[in-house]
Amino acid sequence: MSSDPWGRVDETGTVYVRTADGEQVVGSWQAGSPEEALAYFERKYEGLVVEIGLLEKRVKTTDLSAKDAQAAIDHIREQVDAHHVVGDLDALRVRLDKLVELVEARREERKAQRARQSDEARKAKEALVAEAEELSRSDQWRAAGERLRALVDTWKGLPRLDRKSDDELWHRFSHARSAFSKRRKQHFAQLDAQREEARRTKERLVSEAEALSNSTDWGATAARYRELMAEWKAAGRAQREHEDDLWNRFRGAQDVFFAARSSVFAERDAEQAENLKLKEELAEEAEKLLPITDLKAARAAFRNVNERWEAIGHVPRDARPKVEGRMHAVERAIQEAEEAEWRRTNPEARARAEGLTGQLQAAVDKLRGQIEQARAQGNNARADKLERELEGRQALLDQALKGLQEFGG
Image 1 (spheres, rainbow, N blue to C red):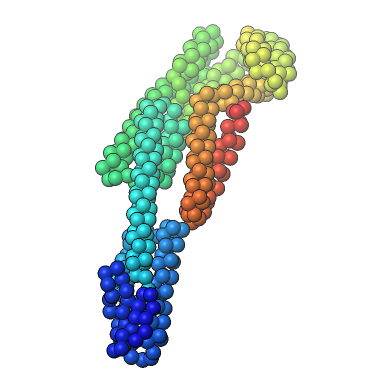
Image 2: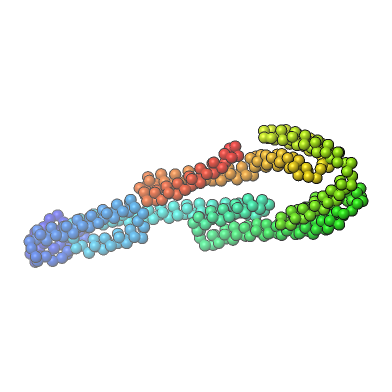
């Protein structure tokens, strides 16, 4: 018979292992010496030790799920309880019990993490809903529409909540988008109706203007054309595809009348030539305002020039487009400068840019904190994944900061 601290082999070849509950039969050995039998079953014990060690490492350093970890523990425990090895089985059970405690702790930690993530997703979706509901009342049709589309993309990137909460928030979010779309549709339908009404009004004005174009009642007809022009301006704009054609016909009818009147009143040619000279001088004076460096001063100076321009009578018909075009070019430059100034100082656009930049900065900071936490926990796979996400968010932040600089920020 042969023995060691953890097992023995009796004279029949039966191998025993010593445990806290007494000796347990390991198996029977008939192929060699008792020492060889003990060595064989001790090697099997060392195999279990290695297997437990590897499992301990996986639980501590990888994202092995609690379910899979528990299944592996149960599998090893079955082998320990079957006592087909020779060694300190009670020590193995102690290690397995501690491993169960660790797995349970990790399970609770992940449960808490999921709860935090769910809470963050809920808050993010509630914020999206609140913004969508506010946008639903906006009259900034293009900007609000673009922002709502961006909110949908953001929503899609967030994890789902429990079904009831997610459905309720989505219902509010969807309702806000539908309300905005309905208001926008009504607005443009009303705008279309107004433009159609303007088209009908201008068709009538064009018809009367064309009927008057051959009149020789110079004074009364000229006065009526002035009235028609006032009605034209009051009518508002027609649809784009009709506006230019109607204007060309309306202005063409007036041109026919006034050209005829000019030919009859030839004596006025000299006056018109003088008018042209004066307007060319004013156009030259206006052109000196370019390039615009002081918008306020340029606007006031152009207004003064324009008032003097309006006080001057007609110029020869063939010279009018050129001289008027010079004035219009200056006027357009001032308008473009005004629009650029408005865009630069628009508080609403600046606030949106600053808000987006703030959100992106917060997201970047948060991701960096999560990466540090994952690295500290040894979860390199999660840290690497978060770093890839950080690269995308940082690129968006850099782009937003560049856009903010356009506002002087």
